[in-house]
Amino acid sequence: MFIRPRRFRIILAFMLGLGVSVVLLIGGYFYYRSNLSLLQSEMKAQAMEEARQAFNEEYPMSLAYVFRQDKKAGESISDTDLEPAEVNARAIPADAVLSIEEAAGMVMRCDITKNTVVTRSLFYSREDFPDDLRLIEYTVINLPGNLETGGFIDVRIMFPNGLDYIILSKKKVIDLWRDEGRRDNLIRLHMTEEEILRMSSAIVDASLVEGSILYAVQYVAPDIQKGAAKTYPANLEVLELIRTNPNIVSHAIETLEARNRLSFEKRMDQDFILSGRRGVFGETGEDHPLFPEIDAGENGDEKDTSQGDDINVSL
Image (cartoon, rainbow, N blue to C red; front, top):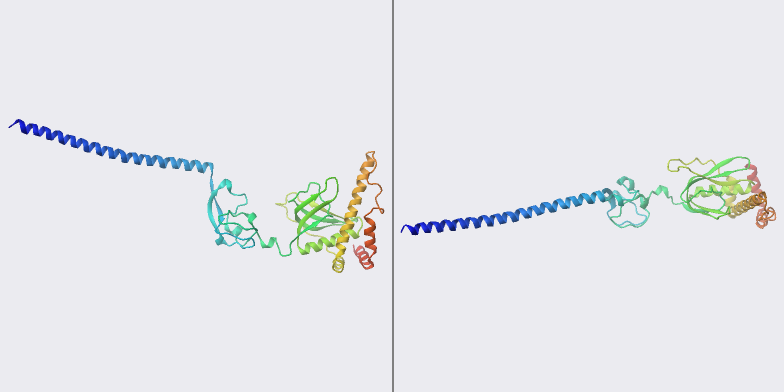
């Protein structure tokens, strides 16, 4: 009787101990699993943070403005068309807009799609491109030897008596062509109607006054230098002559081109003679093939000649 209850209690204690051990093992296992998942999450978050920091160091982000929607060329830009966005700092153009005020009210140069970074090259001010702006080319302007496309120049006229006037002020060279080894050149400029008439007047003046030259002077630091004041007074008689005879400008250009060509040939022959060689162009002057046509044109219209004499007297 005594042995059975004792054995029963031993078995019961053993079972209880085994149950507690199993519960502890199961609890410890789940605790370990839960802590392991948490540890893995922390390790993953730390790895992502380190990766993000490394990415930011390698590809720093900066604030820029992008277009909310597509825009067409010629459309005006409003402040609601732009929105801020984080963009790779290394991919942001140097002329990117950093404030809405820089672009608001401007006009689109070309079609763009939304999310395009807003840059100054994509728009212009209406004041910079008036309705009468045109692309004009000239072949009678003596250009500096180191002038390149994109440079800024003043166009001047110098008369043989030493008078020198500024015709055009701080004009950007849109395009430039120069024939190697010759004085022939061509330059393209954006010109307003007033500037076209002023330049036409100067071309006619230069053709009527023997010894006059049209030449360009290049700016040294156009970003900080202001444009020179225009000092050439457009000749009213020349403007009237241009109005009554539109061909007078083409005739004056031909005269100046021929004069520049003869000056070039004479200078080249002089250089050859001074170096002990024979001139390559021969005698230059009245026998030049270009001059009969020019002289015939000058003598063919008595009205134009008389007006030209009056202009010479006024100069």
